[in-house]
Amino acid sequence: MAGKLIIFSAPSGAGKSTIVHYLLKKFDNLEFSVSATSRKPRGTEQAGTDYYFLTPDEFRKRIENKEFIEYEEVYQDLYYGTLRSEIDRIAAKGNNIIFDVDVKGGLNIKKQFGDKALAIFIAPPSVNELSRRLNHRGTDSEEMIRQRVGKAKYELSFAPQFDVTVVNDVLETAQAEAEKLISEFLAG
Ligand code: ADP
Ligand code: 5GP
Image (cartoon, rainbow, N blue to C red; front, side, top):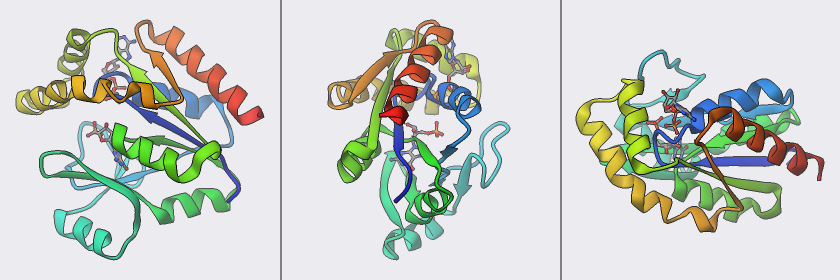
């Protein structure tokens, strides 16, 4: 396999998508691993760009066919997973791969790829700020926000298992920090 893997995990609302989008613009040979999910599209999300949106039945079939390198039920009845075909597609082009996955999926990928992967945990300054950001983003129902914030403390407990943690307090600082980490990792 040609490329290196860069994994971003964080509690929902910590700012990982914002940081990942910034990095994709900064590095030419970096490509986003489009995950599959059984949740419905949100806001301006595009099928095939942000996610492969599958029905729960389609998702189950792909599990049975062993098409995922990892998948998780991140929230109740909502499945997310990384397709082996996605990694093969990007690696075939000789690109490096960037992942936005939950904490368990992130550690799972790290375990499979070892030193070829850098696992970065994005931490919010506080759980209150996380909640404020999710409310401000305005893309989730109150119940969904409650579930996401409710899971955040548990997810934060996974941080020490990652290679490095970046605290996303001031966005520009966190972006610069992530950019430096990736430059060094890709050069190494
Ligand atoms: P995630 O992908 O981790 O769920 P997002 O990238 O969607 O998080 O960010 C959640 C919300 O917080 C978005 O509305 C985003 O614009 C905002 N945001 C991201 N980083 C910061 C920051 N450092 N300070 C304030 N708001 C932020
Ligand atoms: P969202 O619904 O906000 O897009 O994503 C919810 C959570 O699912 C986030 O923590 C996100 O990183 C995670 N996620 C997205 N894709 C995958 C995937 O392929 N595998 C796993 N394990 N988690 C994913």
